[in-house]
Length: 343
Ligand SMILES: Cc1ncc(COP(=O)(O)O)c(C=O)c1O
Image 1 (tube, protein in one colour):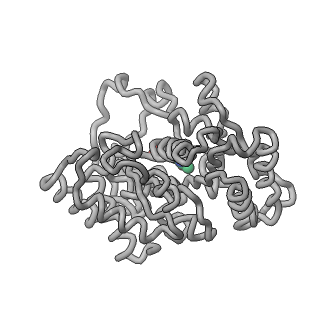
Image 2 (cartoon, rainbow, N blue to C red):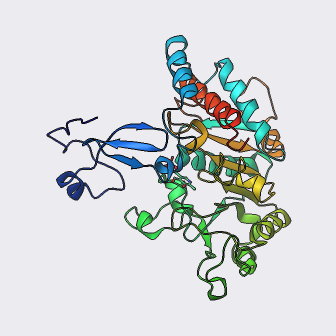
């Protein structure tokens, strides 16, 4: 298939792209099927990273295509505030059934960045709901990537993504990253050395006092500053320290979710029980923007207090649980399951 490149490329301001260089020599995809993209000049390009780590079942999956087409014609949109539609509840139930532990409540969003903002807001509001409003600090990690919105950028640890945007969110600190130990050179899988990097959290607790810290957020495997496996025992120790100090552990599984580890989540792979888990990307196989934040029972329950007719969390998006996104996600889960990809 050959397709013409538009003459005027100026209007579209592309993200994370050197726009002027790109527009001098554009690279365009015009179709995708299975593991391959087709370029505008008819070449086949293997999709080695599944889009942006999001098309985990490959492109043009018939179940997803059909489900989206059907849903658009049946119920294209339904407000997510004060109204529901059945597929949102069905999807939340399916998702909770593949998430380990007691992360039984699902808040729908539209991207990884929104997933992270939602998780950070829930963490701060959770402590406030429990009468611990002094817990407001957020701890991220150097080299971490948690999207591009203000909260995620602030807890993130990629200098280029932060330096142009002012003072960012206040009250944020960072653990040291775990990369670069000489003893770990040429390691396959999880490195033997570096579990003590988790103790950096104790250092930050000494500095700030743990009673001021709301949450720690990390990617189980860092995915944007290189793929950085956690040292053996590191995540477990981080979990133990957060528990000891009453700090919530948020795992950002936006990349590691939905089969990237050969399991539904890194939480299964590493046998972790976080308080909040952020997901997005492959939840709907990249077809429709979607994300889901999983909250542990104890987190959800902290909000379900007081008069029942009052809103518990003043948060949500116009497209939270969009019916077409839900249909795409349900068909994606069917595909993962019925094709034996990891479910
Ligand atoms: C770990 C992680 N968190 C958050 C995000 C942000 O996701 P999005 O680009 O969908 O906003 C990404 C994106 O790559 C990511 O890798």
